[in-house]
Amino acid sequence: MLIILSVIIGVFTYILLPMRWGAAYSPSPRAKISTVLRSVIETYYKDKDVVRIIDLGSGFGRVCFEAVKIDRRVVCHGVDIDPLKILWSKAIARIKGIDARATFTRGNILEIDLEGYDIIYMFLWPGIVLKIEEKILKEVRKECIVISLEHPLRLLKSEKVDDFYIAFIDSAKEIKNKEAVNIA
Image (cartoon, helix red, strand yellow):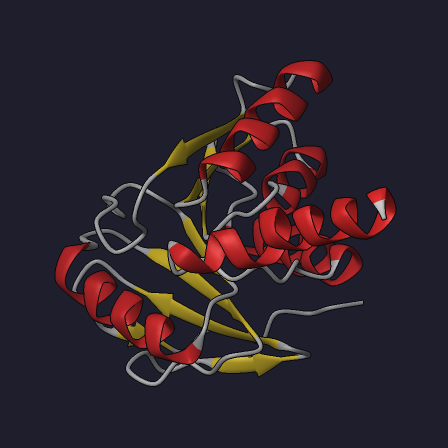
């Protein structure tokens, strides 16, 4: 009986409670995101001193943890509405000694300031992806790369690379055609 109760509490805490905040959880695949981020960073940001990444709907922080391992110049900021996942992510970042480069904030991703990031990463439901695209077009005033896992970008012209949709935006809000990201 105790095991059944523990499973119910675990499912509620892990899946159902976050849905209350509109934050259903589905982790990004570890190997694929590392490969894509590494390729984007090495191709487009090789001469930049600091590469700023934001992970919208960061969950338990996997994307930020993978990103900061790729290159010492990477600073990643994860945003999630679920306070339990943010507490967990902050604790793990502190334990790993990377809390200066992998930071986490509890917040609504539709209200977070997207200005100043080089890479905007998301693995979100299609309706939210569309709202984020609208937000990007209104707010972002510098060149950046937008990466959406599995869900197509509808307002931003993007290239499909494996399971990712990648858009290149310049400071004039024009979608650029860049060479394809090479995923080896």
